[in-house]
Image (cartoon, rainbow over the protein chains, first blue to last red):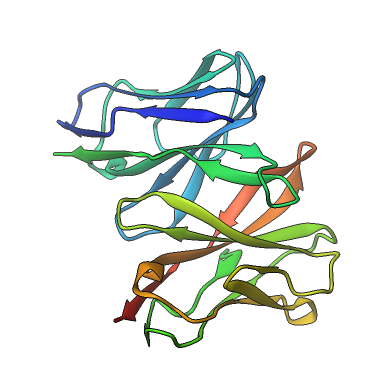
Length: 115
Length: 118
């Protein structure tokens, strides 16, 4: 069974400060990995998509970047946070589970507050 | 342009009632899937059920079922015998093939916040 760990659980950061959020998945080799972002009270928006180490595709430009340094790790970062970066960040991966088809599963998320 | 629309921002039901949540979507693809997720108050996203476009049969999973009206590009989630634990925000999501992956792009609706009153 796969396990996914997102860190940190929550962050409070100042505008202009750097940020690094991480996601590690165990028990699944070479997974596709995704970053999603949810503004408070809003819907989920896909930010990045990675199919393999070193390959990341940007979906939405939010002055964020992502990297896939290892097969099981996906990192979201920025050098300068904006107020608009506040929200809930979710790492996701596809798996067959018991649904009979590939389904997207989500980590527990990181809640980011930028002040 | 909005790909997935959930017009009910909120909803409520009494314990034991059947609840229907609506969703409409836009796509020009023949093959696609519609997923339903529930977001708990903690933020955790829980997969509930999905409907593939090529299957005319409405999918069912436990107390969850869907009413799929493909020609109208609409799908409803039906929760039978609702319970207070069903409270949360329900998201409809459209999945289209992208770079060979059925989940390469998932477009979410705005969500419907459901409260089930004990």
